[in-house]
Length: 404
Ligand SMILES: NC(=O)c1ccc[n+]([C@@H]2O[C@H](COP(=O)([O-])OP(=O)(O)OC[C@H]3O[C@@H](n4cnc5c(N)ncnc54)[C@H](OP(=O)(O)O)[C@@H]3O)[C@@H](O)[C@H]2O)c1
Image 1 (cartoon, rainbow, N blue to C red):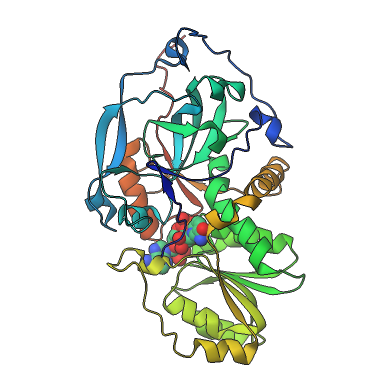
Image 2 (cartoon, rainbow, N blue to C red):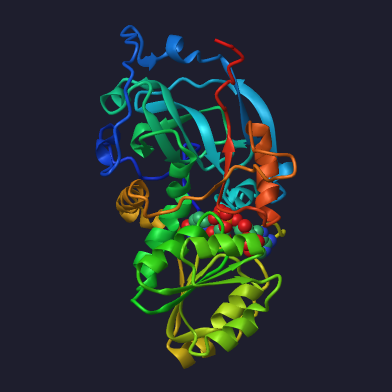
């Protein structure tokens, strides 16, 4: 099964991230944003900032109508009423939404085979609270800036349970990179990597959303880090974030390079590609090496979702090296989530962590702006063009034409 599998409950994905703490107090090392007071419509169960936020009655959202790993075939843009928050919910006006490799697994129905279309798409967003239920108002207020991961992010407005939101100091796409991509690298390496200073770590798809964090965190742990990527520009980026050896596999043979330059083998592999890359990684493990299966993107757009892997000799190879292959799936580690996010926010605020965002500025049709561009953004990622986390700007602020 694909990565980032979350269980559905009443049409929502379950995630445990908010922790019920108030505003930005929850995150050390970040400044509190200015707050706007809510408009108290005490005759209503909800607080909606109709005046301040100009909430329309309808909105656009992306809906999965047909199960397919071809995102364009599965998903369409629809108009829908802007939902009203329930008692413990926030209505978030999304500013940026994150693209994940698993968006195509989700549209193919691989997350929960019992759920039938139509259902909402998108895993993560960051934006402003524009309405909230009564009990949610004990923790949040209109104007708070929040990030979340859960279903239905590919929409202009999303309802999110308050306890699943993370307060953020500003609506910046960099914070969005930490929610899934950053947290995955942080927790997987911490819990399953057993990294020791001086060890050799290979990160595949290293210049992407989650790979960039695995590279930096392994480097911080004092390891020698190798990263794979598909262009010289990405290799340059990897060097800039501390990667000791960037391998552009379009110009260098991965297996041969590892054999020649790392004859002792790899102590840890953070592996996201699967198929033949996974085979090379297994064959390159050192004695007592640990390979963490993060994903297998090379198969996601196929009918089965699973790339071909010749695994008959895997037990022999693992035994001969006392090596191990370990699977990692973020929702199984939610107990570590808040600590991971808070640590990375702190590092980012201190300038110790690069959160590279790819908003599509160099994409053929330009920047990913508006929900329509989610389709282009998914294609762009699967063409291997992204450098950093792919992010779509849902609602850029209007450009003032005033000359005053
Ligand atoms: N286990 C979990 O809980 C979890 C959570 C988040 C993400 N993930 C996994 O992490 C991996 C990366 O996800 P992401 O969202 O951060 O994406 P990403 O790394 O930002 O983008 C995917 C990258 O993979 C490479 N790629 C794209 N299509 C490919 C193909 N068909 N075959 C081989 N390589 C391809 C490209 O890099 P190059 O062209 O440079 O190779 C591309 O930039 C995925 O496997 C995803 O499922 C797992």
